[in-house]
Amino acid sequence: MTTSERFQVLRASERPATAWLNGGGVTREAAGFPAGSGLDRFDWRVSLADVASAGPFSPFPGIDRVITLVDGAGMALTVDGVERQIDTPYRPFPFSGDATTDCRLLAGPVVDFNVMTRRGRVEATVDLATAPVTVEVPAEGTVLLVCLAGSAVLGGTDAVELARYDAALSAVPGTHRLRPDGVTAVITFRTTR
Image (cartoon, rainbow, N blue to C red; front, top):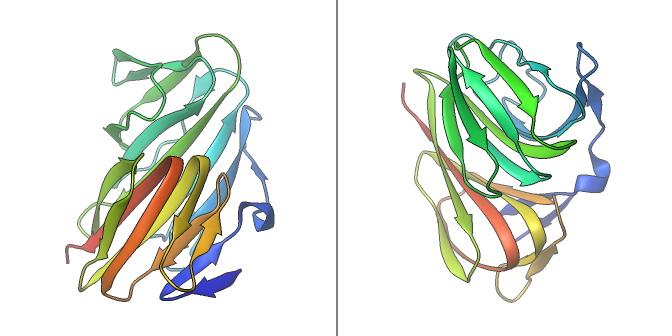
């Protein structure tokens, strides 16, 4: 972990993989708040998952979810009985963690990107940057950047490069220059309580 300007840089190489209880894949948490809160007490959590086989999603009552296909042919998610094809990379799909959700892989394993927020406490917007943008960390908010493809450069004079799956986190209000060479997720969290 390093720090550049007002961002804490979270390297993908430093994340442990956690096996799913059903054995269908592994998850690597990019960041969560409060730090170390676990799956039952987080306000927000962002992770990347290697999905190796079909099966049901774990329920997350009171959680809003956004899932984005990163690698692979995709999956069919059946959410409360309605099937939705998640087969276009980098297109976020929001759904409720309360919903009964089942996954069928379309053609082999996938990697997906997950943003989860506790309803009534935090809301998140998930944007994908493919060209230079100015990232604003709002007052009373937090921004997490996750490089999903290629690389990205964050900042000015003491710029830092993000490799694939590296992340950068800030809760200090201000604006920052992001120059992606690929696709970088920009997640803005705002407290709602």
